[in-house]
Length: 116
Image (cartoon, rainbow, N blue to C red):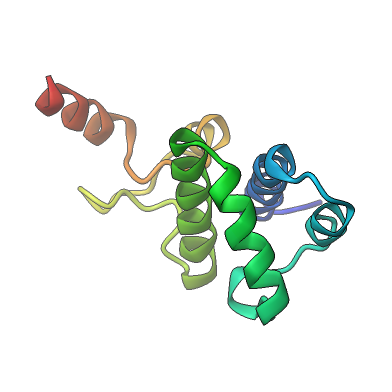
């Protein structure tokens, strides 16, 4: 059985690949997307492909990719699942619903209230 964080990591990678797939138009781009390559080990040619694909994404999709990449980095560094405001653990149910969450529900609501 997969650990919850590994499940979430796998789901994040699928979401990331799907967003890029929306922008991919050539067979080479699609072939590259089929590999689960982490951003830190992408070769130069793959980086150029990523840049072309990012250019095809709209701003909302770009923000989603950035949030996913940030979550994947937090998973790798061991800080995933911790609220960046209060430092408490983010409940797994919240992470399952919103895997890119950086705050617990209470802190997230507080941030939203400040925006209004």
